[in-house]
Length: 105
Image 1 (cartoon, rainbow, N blue to C red):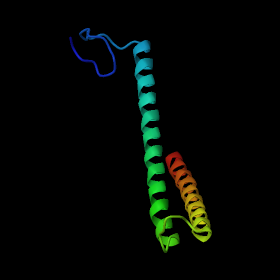
Image 2: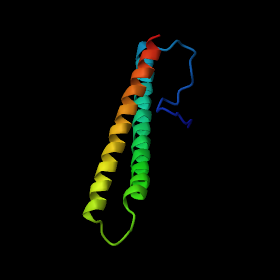
Image 3: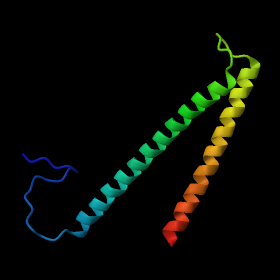
C-alpha cells in the first residue's frame, strides 16, 4: 500500500491530464494550508507580544517584588501593557498597509 500525503488514492498515475475536480481539490488543500500557516503565525506573534510585555513591563514596574502587587505596581503594569498593545497594533496596521501598497505596484 503506497502512502499518499494528501489523502489521494493508491492508484498509479495513468498519465492523464488532471480534471477540474482534481485542480479544485488541490486549490482547496492549498487554501487550507495557507489558512493554517496564517493561524500559526498569528499565534506566534501573540506569544511574542505577551512575552515582551511580561518581561519589559515587569522590569519597568515591579521595583520591589513581593508576595502581592501594590496598587501602584498594578496600575503601572496595566498602563505599560496597554501602551505595548497600542504600539503593536499601530505598527502592524502600518506594516500591512505598506505590504499591500507594495504588492499593488
